[in-house]
Image 1 (cartoon, helix red, strand yellow):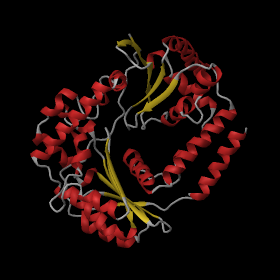
Image 2: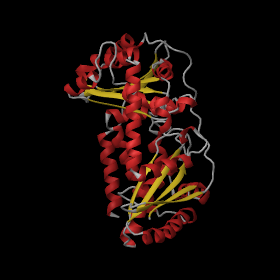
Image 3: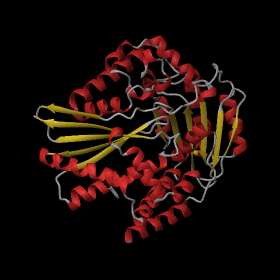
Length: 433
């Protein structure tokens, strides 16, 4: 009861800290979408360039090549030396980051509000004159190959996780690792990689989000100055469609030499962000594996006193997703016993409803986490851009929170019956010889 009350207090506290924000959007003539979210009390500003394309848009022969832009984006332009962009931002007390995903690509910087002019110029410079010399591309191909090769050789978990993802996403664009097939990386054609940038800097594929302290009329003028001359290379990337994942049970054993621990990976095929089930499945993820409330931790470690470690990873794709639960132990017998209980837990989710107190506690935790994300300029910018990419909506009425508050145990039982079934599982046992 105390935990439930605490979560309730946290929600009220977070809501008071973050009562809402103004947001609007418009388009430049070249097709670039601009979202503005001013906040007069902020002392900084976030400029996020959200590209509506990623690895799933790569041609099949070089799928994974877009991943190289995660580094190439920082390797200099016509007027900037390699990494000069990052050095300037850090020198002035800001922060910058970027990420290539399957369905989108995100680059942002958070800087003091008086640096906004230079920050916008940095982004326009990257879009207009990125240095894509053959030597730069080859260097990044080699570096990516070496890094993935070394990780793969050192980590059995990495190889196991890669295998289970391929099985979960079989026959979809998500079955190829983000970086591509390891043996093909060095043979990616440099000209083809260079050509991919016409998707990244096509204004019809770009959403720019400005969040923080700024004058709206002034910022519109600056955006027009720096981005209105971006050349539109043609129609935008195709609309994202959910990838249909086959319902096929897969079970595999691996025997490996001298492992420090045995482990089992449970891969659960999860709904896409385009699916209304996504929110409900996210709740069940919290319920099972979030360390703050994990049902699995309570059962295996606290109640049964088993010597196991529970961890998880989950994808963050728009078109299809997976939850991978890892249970590890130095004793194989513990894992054999754990498998029986895991089957019972999955069955319980489908056959019985969670208690009202459990549902309330986890809903409160999820809402707090969501509000925390929105309270950062980069988190808010990401939510706004992705929502607009998916639905063309800015979610001003906070649809996520509305739906979360209406969620009930009947919804969760329905989703459990749909996703926590045998045919929706991929299981890999990795045991030491």
